[in-house]
Length: 282
Image 1: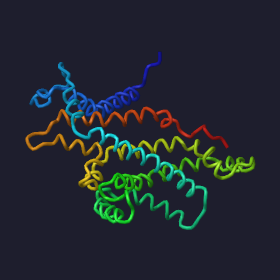
Image 2 (image 1 turned 135 degrees about the horizontal axis):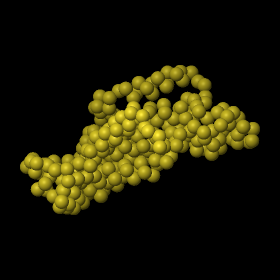
Image 3 (image 1 turned 90 degrees about the vertical axis):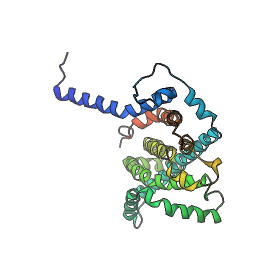
Image 4 (image 1 turned 45 degrees about the vertical axis):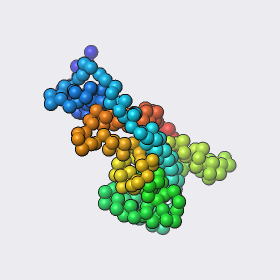
């Protein structure tokens, strides 16, 4: 048996320590969701419980319209993922395969857009959504469209810049061979290029889904009076009360919110982990 080198043991120990530090808040969230109220409010919290309870989850599901908030979040996140992936794929193909004026400027603008904090754009976006509502039905304030459009806009720069590398990695000789075999540009785009850049699409979709699913700022700013169009992060506000916060309910609702993200990640992890290297050979 080979004796592991000290530096490798130290690296593995550091990796385990980092994993524990990252996973501990999730563990504490789930633990607090199953703790009875007396233990959650105790001044001497313990990292375990001998009396697990589902009372916090019952309080969450007893909240009016919680199921509707859940469906709203799924609708918004799903629409953003599909729309941003398709638009980013077409845009990345355009800026990579076609030569046109100001192409470099467009790419730089994508990077600049990523540098602007979302908080700095919330107020301008609020007035934009208000004005759009007067001319375009379904995208104004108090609608799900006011959440979908901004998230698509903020997801596209990162997605386009990332997919550009995947599209560029596909050899041009493959495209030329497809044209010689009689394939049209549309057929090459969707039947050859799209499957090859799918790992990049999955990676950008994970980013879009998580950022949209966990959004609170836009949901709080754009959904003012139409509470039926609220999303799950807004449902957490119910458990913040003047007489005392219901931390058990907050942790239970947060645990429920985490489940779709985990399910989505498990479904796409194989595609996410697989790279483009070796998939295409010149």
